[in-house]
Amino acid sequence: MTSDACHPPAITASDIFECRQCGECCKGYGGTFVTESDILAIADYIGTSADDFTGKYGSPSGSGLVLAQGEDGYCIFAEQGRCKIHPVKPRMCKAWPFIESVLRDPGNWYIMAGVCPGIRADVSEAAIRGCVEAAMDASGEKRRKK
Image (cartoon, rainbow, N blue to C red; front, side, top):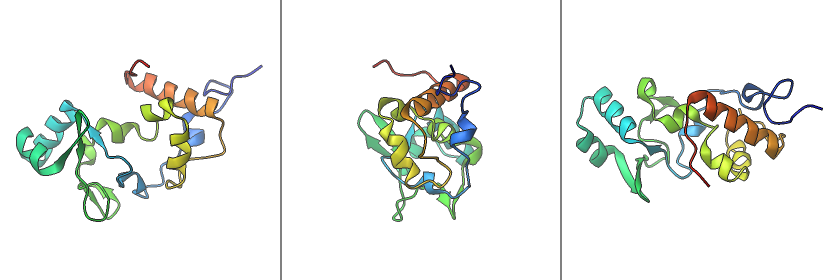
């Protein structure tokens, strides 16, 4: 009997997502949360202080900060489908679409698949959950406790 949760011989993360460089992941959809280390890295990369970065490029959201969006709804750092801060892009962007919100509600995967041509929607919730967990474990990403 084989598992349907991203363990051989089952599917892998690359079986359910292949980036097509469309830039749709840079569109708002709840905002791109940034950590303190993201803020410091991006501020350094663009040559500003963390305080100036926060004031100019961030928006408060709950207890955290998200990257500001342009009038078109895309991240302030997205330009013609490309990331201007790609070498230091936030942790959330590096992990996408294998993000914690998918573990909290696998329905988020299907919502993201509706706008991202690289995400397969014909996958079971168990497989999605397994792939997200495997990707987070491989990246050293810590999951919040339920």
